[in-house]
Image 1 (cartoon, rainbow, N blue to C red):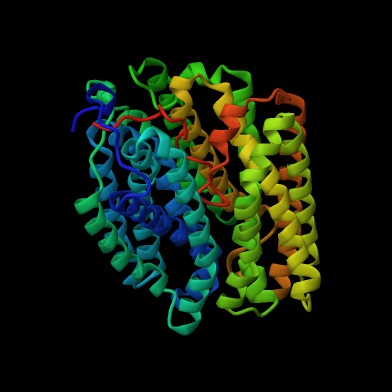
Image 2 (tube, one colour):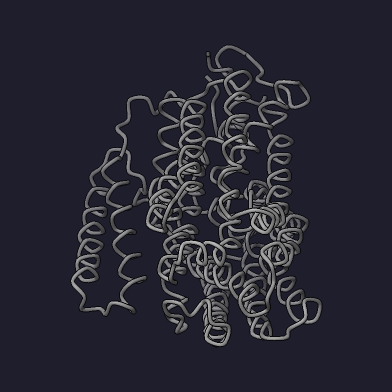
Length: 501
């Protein structure tokens, strides 16, 4: 297809049948990956009981997915720009479906962890292409409405996910939360093949892919994750832990050297040298690390200590997604008027207060009196933090780097969650089979959420010290769209951010 800017082709209209088909494909595709990531947390107790898994196994069930997703997310976006966004999106959807089947049939926890790692690769291929396809397919005047619909429908999917997942786990088995991805993927593939136009970025066709950088980044993350997860149990002098640390260090050094010399690096040094960009990503690392720890520990606490069913645990977290869905855009507009520093600072401190309230969620705690206030306050704080945080990332980078800057920020958020699930439970004193012991889990949960609250408050204080109070309305307009509570946009929403060819 020809570039519409060169041919005068207007692109797809938002209100057209094809426009609705494109939205359906992209929302279902990203919704599939997002639902799987959120529902697994609710399923952890059931997985542990069924597969006789210890705490390390549950950590790896979460982290294997996040590891490959974070490691290959930037590469997935580059592949779509170069070889066709629809093509890479479809490969990712099919890959994700096959990996989901492997998760469904996993006979033991080792097989489940391996299949989850494969799922993460599929998600890294399909996720960047979703929003990029919308940007590239719709005509300029309709892109804002299309992205708003994509964001809103994605939020609805996120709100329904824990409820549906909890019902499936309670009604039948945790395996159904993976099996349901297969018919969803088939629908997405059928729609995309029939109704979604192909697009790519001609300027990237001749640029070399930084595959070496992506592999080294994944190796560094894998080494760090294994060492941080298993070090407390095995001992830091254990040969495998030492080898993991050595692999992490060597891969990290190699990554830095490769990125300096690469013609088209995944992480350009020019972005990291921008003070506000680096600061915003450090704030992201702290805040999203706290969220990673909370979202790992809280479903365990609700089910093991308070006796909630999987369905009840999913419904208990529903207000968090609803508040984020309703208020995130308002947080962006507030930052447009007063600048991002104050909303980020106050929002992070409010979120830290909500996390601290979770220490009241113990044996005999009531939902309305203890759980709901903590979850709601946390969500209110995040609603004031997330959009201004993305605002700062986009405003710090040049327009030409806006997509890359947002993708890097998203990757940092994923890495933060990865490291948090590896570190916070063991730092809180949760060992091996303790997650099945209500008394031991409750004690560790309190320490874990306090640590998460400290991280969140530190992010707020860092924002106050390092983030500018200047306003940037264009950047805020870009940052008011979010696909989930735990992810920033992968690409900018500016009208000229992508081309359809």
